[in-house]
Image 1: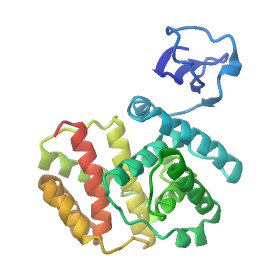
Image 2: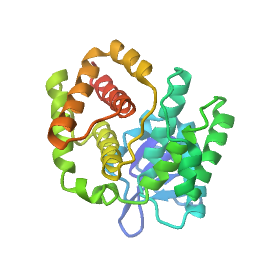
Image 3: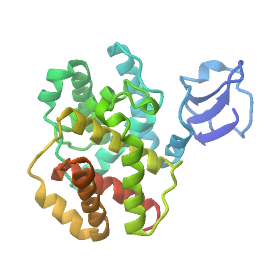
Image 4: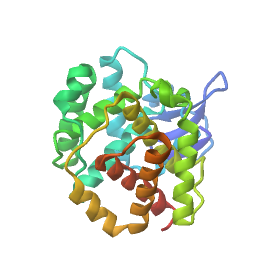
Length: 279
């Protein structure tokens, strides 16, 4: 063990000199570094986890991480493809955000789960299962369509984000420009510098990638959530201004219009970035 992440997760080096994240009850308790003589204490090994996601081990509740580890284990047995090695952390962050939104009575419109199941039956089944388990284990009631968000997370995790193969071809070459242009808009409007190697940036860039995917396939979501978007925008007018500028950017440069649901997602993600920056 070479670095503790929390009580149950630690960075280790195997016999071949490769680093991995080890998961096991209490393996982070002993003084680091130390040699683990009993390998059976490691329940799971995670190789090739991007360094920018490691901060989540300290940010996310261990109960959520533990739940997600078990969920991903089940998914690997159910799905017939390999999952992105970062999925435990990105899905745990998604689930934690879902739980926090529910506690704050913030409802974000999701695709109807039965529609997702038509195209992705395996993932839809996992989404429904996950939703029931979240409600039971965290004693919280969720909108049933939250299952679709989890299902789509598995769909997106089929690919390595770094290759961006899940972005429609017409957007693939535009991705870097769109990402940098929109982040620059946020920085200029908010008067901050966003750390491009941070998880906050990775979370926003992943959301933008999925937004581009929806634009490229013509499957942009739309719903009647104008009241919620306006309400949150009134609470954070500078961030709402960022979202409107990004909407104008897409319209003027790429000929695309963002619906209010897409704007609401952007507002929530930008708010998280700015909150972490102390604004």
